[in-house]
Image (cartoon, rainbow, N blue to C red; front, side, top):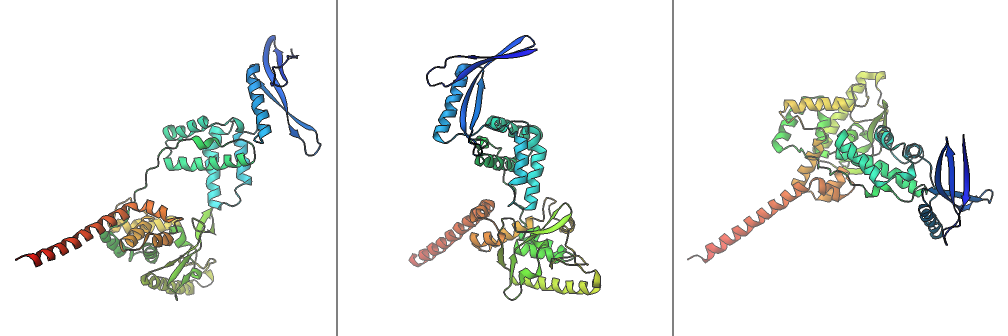
Length: 404
């Protein structure tokens, strides 16, 4: 049997109406302090919206009440939110990701289900603090062994969700802002050396995907952009390729998506690339004639199988690995390194960083510089060495003229 009583106690000046409350449960008495305040008025009924604050001591409740009333006066008040982090993440995933690409949205959902909800889902949204999140990140890094890059991605998802919670006035500030993330090490750039490029091209000529590999090497296009390239975006008259789309697969279904940063770009390519594409076009025409009614190329793709269907990424990689093995290249070389090879070759050939950035489809030239900074530093040193030789040649000629 339990009963509760409420005892009024005169509040100190400016503290408002604070009451001491007691409750007896199975013969044991529990005591706490409670204050009530008016949050505002219900827009529908016009009635006051009452909120309560509780705490172990009168002083604690008085301080909380003072803060609430101050926030109401300043217009910074945030109503108490009983929603859990897990409930908010579910709501955020279903209601606020309308502008994201399907693949990105799926990645968000996986990270939420795999890491965020199991560890933070039961915490009340308004109680989630920086220290709790920091311990979560440390656990992912030290105990689970996730990479700094993956943790940064998880942080980005949680940060975005909590930013929306702030905008919705569920919480006052974003507790992820004060967190420290493990340092990300720059990925090693495995660009092919000139002799390795030569060996790669020699072996690629023996592969059915030869033309795709050559276009990749001399344009720097991403794999998804290459297998999603359509004839509509190849202009033989101007010698250009416009990258407007990439082919993606979600739950076994293939679909077209915009390029990685959402912007299309036009690449003015070397004549050899156009020659290769003309060869591919002729090859495709023959395949189409042989396939007859079985031919099916709904996206008008440049690179297809014998029946017009899109290429599968894992199959492309399988062929690529076979070529690199025959060429005696390092096992660590990836298809993506053809993109790095193009960038390094372009910079070494004298292309300015802005041109390389636009051809690669990077969001900014600063990002391109960050990725290939070691190349530009080497180029600067080479330039300095060349200028030193120019000076030495001039100095030698002057010395020869003044010699008796």
